[in-house]
Image (cartoon, one colour):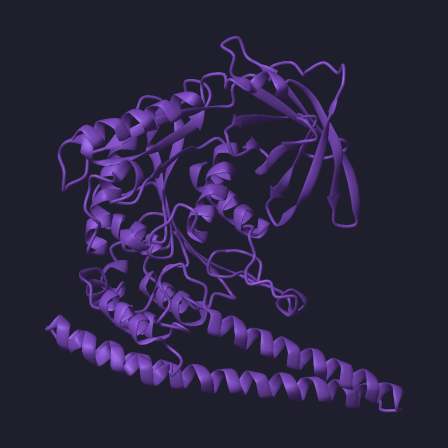
Length: 509
C-alpha cells in the first residue's frame, strides 16, 4: 500500500508539473528561430516562449505564409527533452538544448511529415504575448466493474478545450494486448496520441486510460477477455457523461485494432455511445485472424522481421527488373517490351507472395486448432512449440516455448474463440469502419468486407479504406526506404487524421 501511495504521489506531482513553472524555464523565454525543411523547399519558423501569470511556460508558433502561423503551443521542459506541442495544428517539436543553451536541436513532426529542425535563440527579441489557455488537463480515475474503489480502478488523463463547454468527448482505446507485452511507446499508442491532439484541436474532449496492469491502472489485473475491456469502456463512457462541461449526448468511442472490436462491443450495451470509430477492427474470427498473421511467433508490437526481409527482397528484385528494362531500352527494345519485363516480374512476386501466405496460413490455422481443442496447457504448449520449430526452422527452442506459452494464455484462448459477427447487428449508433489497404495484420480485403456484412442493417454505418496505409495507419514504406534498411514509418498519415476528423464532425452536427 505504501508503494501504491508513493506511486500515486509521483504521478500527481508529474501532473501538477504541467501546471507549474519548470525550474529551468527562464532560459527558454524569448524567440527561437530557424529554417524548417519541407518537401520542395523550406520555411522560416519561430517559436515565441512566454510565461503566464502563474509561471507556466507557454508559446506561440509562427510560420510565414502557412496555416500553422500563430498557433498556441504547450511547453514541457523535462530532464530529457523540451517539447512544444501545437494541438490545434497537430504538430510538435521535441528537442535538446545545445551550444550552451543557445540552440534547440530536435525532431519536428506533423501529420505525414517528420524532419530534423534546429532553432537558435534570438538575442534581445521579446517574447510573444501570452496566448489564452487552449485546453485543460486533468488526471482522473474511473471505477472498473472488477474494482468498485475508483482509487484502484482505471487511471488516465482527460484533456478538454478551455472554457465551460459543454464539449463533445471521445474515449480512445488502444490495440489491446496482454499487459506484459503492452507499451506506452507502441505504434498504436502513437497513433492515438496523434488522434488525441487532432481531435482536441477540433474542439473535443479526449480521454485516454492506461491499460490494466500498467501506469495509473497498475492495481488492476490484466484483462483475460475482450468482454472485460468492453465493460471497462462502458464505465469510462458513463464517467464522461457525468463530468461537468461534457455534453452527455455527444460522447463517443474510438478504438484501434483489438481496441476497435472492444469499441464495437461496448456499443452493443445500453446506453450506446453517440458514435463509434473502429480502426483496423477484425471482422473474422480470432482464429482466422491469427492464422493470417505473417509471423505468429512475433510478440504483439514486435516487428515482423521475416516479412520485412521478404518485402526487401521484393524491392530488390523490382529494382533489378527496372535496371534490366533500362538496359533493354538502351539496346533498342520498344517501350512496350520494357513494360512487359517489369510487369512479368511483378506478377511473379505477387504469385510467390500468395503461395507463401497460403502455406503459412494452413500451418498456423492447424497450430491454433490444436490449442483450441487441447485444454491441457502443458500438453498444448509442447505440441505447439514443436510445430513452431518445424514452421520456422531457425527459431530458438526457448523462443518457441515462450511463444507457445503466450498463445495458450487465457487472453489468447479467449481471442481464438472470439467471433465479432455475433454482436455486430446489435450496434445501431453511427459507426465508421476504417481500414488501411496495406494492413498486413488485419487485411481489409477480408475483415472490412466481413464488417460491412455484419452492419448491413445499420444505415448509419460508413466504411472507408485508405490506400497506402498500414495497420497502424502510417504511410506504407516505399521501395527506396526498404532498400535503405528502414523498417517502419513513424508518423500517422494525414489522410487518416482528416478522415476521422471530418466524419466525427459530421456526426456531431
